[in-house]
Amino acid sequence: MIALEKIDAIAPKGAGKKAMKAELTALHKRLFALQNVLYAEGKHPILIILQGMDTSGKDGTIKHVFSCINPMGCNVKSFKVPTEEERKHDFLWRIYPHLPAKGMIQIFNRSHYEDILAPYIQGTLPEKMIEERYDFINCFEKQLLSSGTIILKFFLHISKKEQSKRIEARKRNPHKKWKYNKADDKAAENWEAYQTVYGKIIERCSPEIPWHIVPADQKWHRNYYVANCIVKKLEELKLKYPS
Image (cartoon, rainbow, N blue to C red; front, top):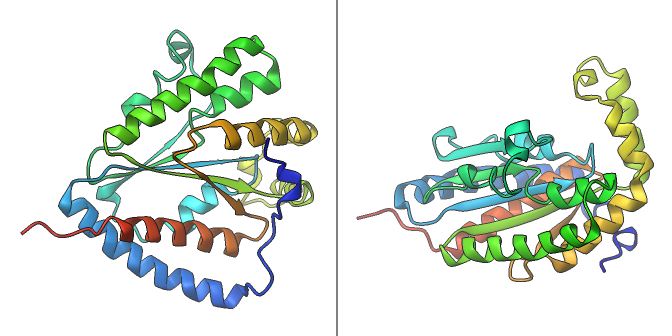
């Protein structure tokens, strides 16, 4: 199992805030250009999955990395606690309607992985059923790969200390108070349990689609890291405008 506590949540030595912010500006221009070709070519569906502890910066990543994207070619879906209707179906049922079409970028703010995390932490499902969900997710993502979907999975890795600071900021900052939920404190109390299950998810789920473990204590590094990964993947596709 991946030991997340042994992986740094801070930017590597030598990484400079000013330089990375400048790099992000350049990446925005490149991402904008690549997305235009992706949309015009209409061959590749792109699925971007963002997971992480509460306050790890999923919303902020979407805001700062994808601010350059043409909204016509991009959708965002936030997966929250399943609704009453969603609970009447298989746990993957609510995912299918939001998968990307060819030429589109789909961003998942949380995802099907919540259906392993939440039952594990809350103890709402037998261990056998939770274990089966690893296999179901692997089959599901393999199916997406076979259909040509490009999947990028990011785990926004923050330290316990940084999470505590961000929760306190939500309580005090008038512009952030709306984001505070008492569940944030409860999640912080279960820090070790979350780290254990995330480590298991990263190790066991879809080896063909490796997770990017993003050091996310510093937002400027997090934004650069995610943008750089996406640009590199799009460049690998050798996109071309249709003739």
